[in-house]
Length: 439
Image 1: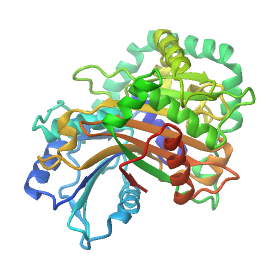
Image 2: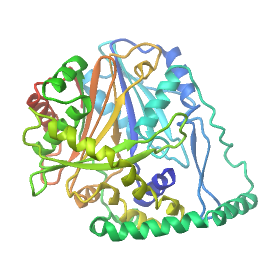
Image 3: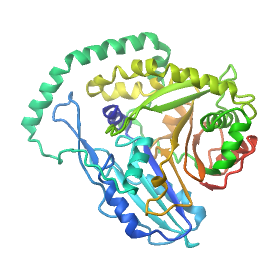
Image 4: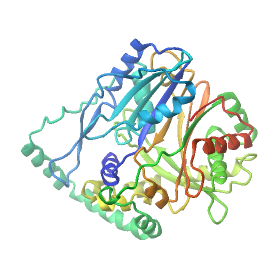
């Protein structure tokens, strides 16, 4: 999966990033934050990709501890500009091969508070991987994953070893090839749709410019959230799914049969897992009509989807051994296959209960903390070709539920103000009011 993520970065010319943010009502304890910064380099973030000298062999992880210093802004800014600052931080150069693969920044606020954010390449860590890396670093649990130093292999010896490993994997590659053929037959509509809507090569994209996709992160009091979930027959996750579906209705992400399709990445990350990306996907289509008052259908649909997840994951992951042999043009065209047949999916990612240390990057509890996915290099042509995007992510800490929304919809007003209104109105459908909003 990590090899596939890296191939996607090179094939598309941009890559997804994961970001986590903290807001304090006081200045940051810089000594504590320096310990956190140092510890982040010993774990999932402390690495980068080193290419095999053979174009058809798998690449490998090597040590890369990250930037030497924390980037502290020189000039304080108003709290209302935290959202713009986090986007600026997420748009700084990151590269999973050449580095840096992550960064950490601090912004003093003119009211005496402060903001912190860490951003990492999705190749190095997915959302839950980043949260686990944060938890370990904040709790003082650095991990030495045993990766070699960059350039520690001589080119000839590396080529010989990688060639032998590729030959030894021929039976695995043959099984993957057969699995790919089965998927192509079984999911012919998805394959055809993905290939027909594929983005152009970065080299021929012309003057197509990146788009600043509007993003909002809202924080809701956890007691209010849980009480509302219980009132309408659900739990924290199904209320989140209901919120995402109703937001999808408000933003026009409704299929011709009146349903909304939620595309849900599910983590299969195990203890001490070193994969950057430990994800499988499932899709659930729901009738959104009564979700603000009854979550019964969502609960039943997800129970069935989770029961079938293992077989679906086995099918979709089976071709992955072929990744190192896949040309970039094929990777570009196949990028959308895992999202299912829905023309207007709503991405719906649940980060679950965050460990207490996640809210304490400098050793003390932040007033607000939350994460999101961001794609700073994505272009208008790509977004229009895929029918726009709506991605919603959530997690919870001791005080708040955080919900982050990215949305770009062709033919609509794509602004921070319009998205903030849609998000606020959707919360109101559920009788909820965010305590604080970024963006």
